[in-house]
Length: 84
Image (cartoon, rainbow, N blue to C red; front, side, top):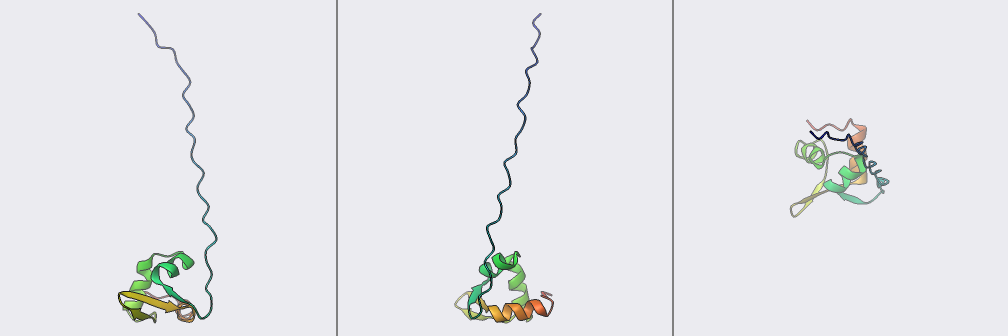
């Protein structure tokens, strides 16, 4: 009868987490799409969509896209960043 030889298992190595690149900053006088605003504030784009549709965040439409100025985003945050 043959016996198995215990071979040491290879230790599992985890890949180091990728560090997030520096988040962009708000530039006065610039307009941001929901995706850009979400990247800046580390939020989901739907957060900005809900706030816009419920009247808490101002913006303007250009076709299907909605843009927010840096000033509008700052006012929204200063008022509490409400979405509902």
